[in-house]
Image 1 (tube, one colour):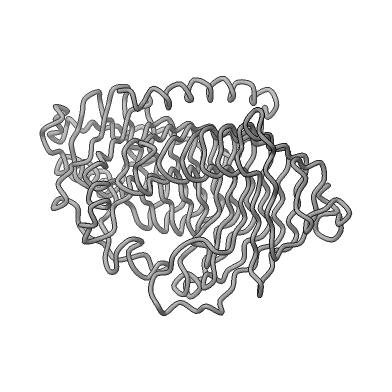
Image 2 (spheres, rainbow, N blue to C red):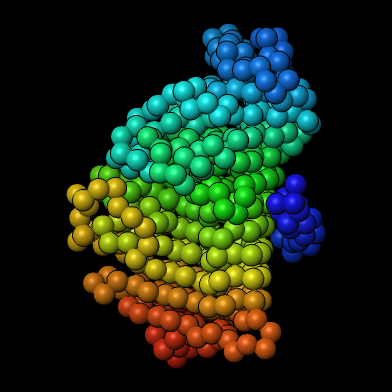
Length: 447
């Protein structure tokens, strides 16, 4: 119980912050790209033999219910109702024109038996499992080529019971890459809202090759020491709206991705049109991240009204040689962070490679990064910006940033290399490569 006291306390703080932001950012929402759909046809998991006793395996019930939705094709789609109870299950596929509705007190709980988790092919933009070569375990909730899918309810819970997977990772006994909690591929018109996600074996919510995705009013929880439990990772996806959520996990809260080295370059599908707004959370890694898998490119990302506590890195844009791809037009604003190891980090030496066949001459291009209106308390290292010698980062624009160290300690200096841009009203004073006298080019219209 004690390990959840901190996240619950921060969740209360986040609610207060969201209330205050509603005054500042009233009416600002991107959620209209996927409206909530009302379904006339409704069925219950109980109709298909579902038993919410926490012991009975309900995989067959879920599959039969979704088979019914898929094949009867009711006009306007069908809502699958999950009443209060704990429904143990293996992975199952969703289908188009369906709503998965978790009532208050409903828990979909993943089985911890790896033999119940089928293997699927690696993503083409990754070329292999993210952790292990070859296939990977399918996600608990999965879908491919879908449209009009809603996961919502009355703050019911989807529990990945990830500790058995985390222990396999720690003990180096994993044979295949761990499963996500939710992965939707090649899909559009996705809405995820008012659900609690907890203890994912790997990444929590992973829309990949998707468009028109809204993730709003969700809570995502995992212990701080749980490996690679990213909150939300839009990957080679477009028109994604992430808003009004609380995330406390063991890795990045939100990380925008687009494929891994030569496989991502060959697949060539960027992430673009990503909006991240009113997110609160904590993590030993990053709050708002781009990368490090960015080989298809990441462009046109807006993150604003972000509140971060007990962080590794507040804002982290990360890539590496061999990635290729372009990271461009990234805007982060109105950020509060408290107790962070590093405030802002933009680096070209982060992340591993899928195999020895990556091209070291495939250099990423990073330009047009705009960060403004950031306030930090108890930030040990203000900022690190390290570009690549043969591909310097350009158009790095910083404005109205105040990152304070611990009380009584001297503010840390910025560290920079292979970067150009401009800075104004930044404290502590930024590195020489980003001085206010260089307000030219891409930054002149930003200040």
